[in-house]
Length: 219
Image (cartoon, rainbow, N blue to C red; front, side, top):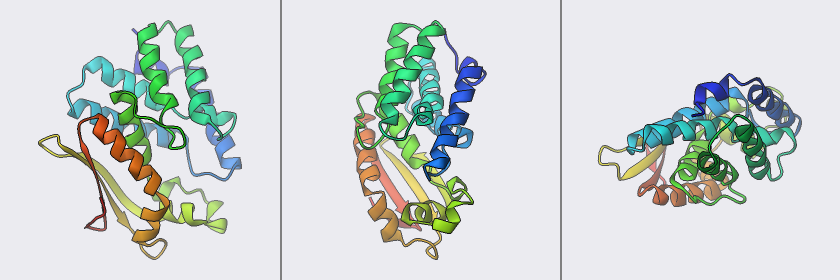
């Protein structure tokens, strides 16, 4: 069976992740390279393991997380679907089983808020993990000169964590925001669509979604 270790050591995959971030950088977006996919991978792993999914499903979730943004190498537009098509071809060439390719590609194609649907638990976990990766280090140095609202929102986040309660009833994204760069309401206004999507994804996992900013419960 195909493993996560094989994916992260695959030269083709590594090249596409790196090139995707180069394209995104030219388009003026925040960091989407190995730091992002690594963070998303660990959060997907945490979600699926904590909720008791099989070891194999956790492995598939980590593979999907690592490959979910490779389509950005072509363009940001419809990158979720492009990423899924690229992943489909690579996974098939690497000998992955059709049912596992389906799981991975369904999750990848449904992670972006423009077209996302938490169609499966794996897709739901990827949605939440992707949207939870908000941090100051995702803002590039050249963005500090333009610093639009999206950049300010990311730059304002000094600390973030994702946690599932002991009863496995609620998943909460907790953020600390430096209000010198972005107000709490600005964050909520800009990311409202993403948070609504996280609520739907959490429901697919039989969870409630919570958002806490600077100690204040927002959702």
